[in-house]
Length: 86
Image (cartoon, rainbow, N blue to C red; front, side, top):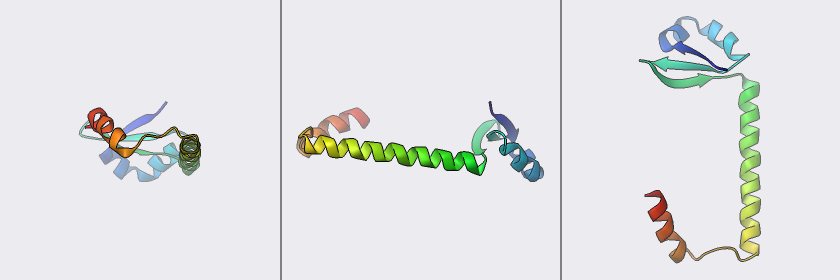
């Protein structure tokens, strides 16, 4: 669960915001829209570690694919990527 506070309250009660963020992420809203999240450094470091681990796994898979010949020439791959993402 996450707590949500207005940006003006976050600014006026910054110390309290930091205390709240130590136990759960705090979403900061401006004009009713979420604009930022404050979270404990431990949670941030955990997330960074997970992202790094995931990137390493993806790199290992890509290397395995290349070594096994499971790749496509760029001339073949590019048109389908453009169609998919553009």
